[in-house]
Length: 436
Image 1 (cartoon, rainbow, N blue to C red):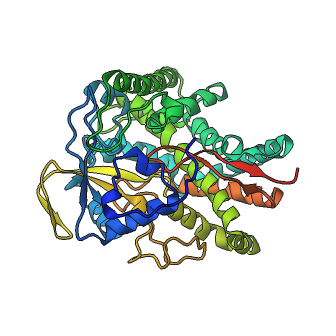
Image 2 (cartoon, one colour):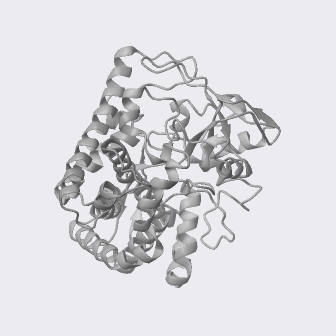
Image 3 (cartoon, rainbow, N blue to C red):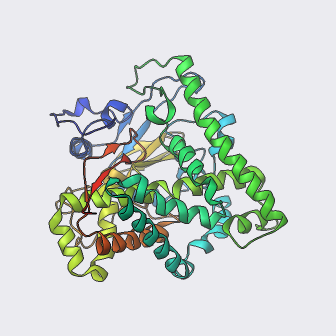
């Protein structure tokens, strides 16, 4: 169980972002470590250990300053998402087939696929779905009240986003629990709870056994394969009889005379079910914890919910940074902030660090729902890969907290059981209490 430890003093030499032991440290300690990295004169290279069945990884340069993350995001022609934007190391080709999707593509192919699905995420389209989201949130809170105090993640934070994205894709309710289980494995591949005995990324000198690596890769690949199978079955049904859901739009779309292949659709389907539930669930869970730890901010929100919920959502996303980093790949030599990157170099855009950059945010570790301006990168930096589901996430968070704080105003969060991950700042469990 990844619970909070007592902070200890860190020196710059102690910081290794590729070491899982770093991600077991308390949140405040990790924030101080990123502040140290931002104060260094240039980016630092972090190396991964040699993992059997994967190519020897040269490591990635960490971009930790807000300005650098923005600059890289604005220039996808230099900071490419291919061959991968989400994996810290290149996956073997047999695994790429399961996980390589739109998020790992550059334009023009990325733009063509994004155009198909973007219609489902416009503010106008989402406004029509707001009543349905509100009904779902109301039912979820009904069931929470009936069951009494318990795990907020399982009973609330996870349920709304997974139900909404599954409904958008036409995934039947009987499959929702399986979708959650499989996406937990895909995202939580470094957490023993989800994958058994994970690869122990403990610095560049670590040795990873072949059996352990094989088990990990096999577990993650099997989860990807099962999601692909679900996508293939739904795709066949919607090609034969379109229903108007997002799956129907994707499998029947014509992109400049070209259709998505079954593999392309399945990979994009996997991206949507992962991104559509994991990050919003993380933000909702962090939101309750933040409002518990900062009761004055809760009172401020409730004093004028409609006026302040927009700013509260942006601050929750900034402060929690549900997606901790994304990777980019240099297409050519390029100088950024005094450092010359070489073609083929990898960089990681540390959104969690950029969102605490003291040169941009006053008192960056404070939780302040009135913070303005709030130019966070919690939904990604500016450019073609800005989060497609940002508006949906905002609506879900707003609707859920309106329902919770109206009907269960005394709800409070306990101490979380954190996901052991450098990629998602997730809570696996979060106890909540309230008067039944």
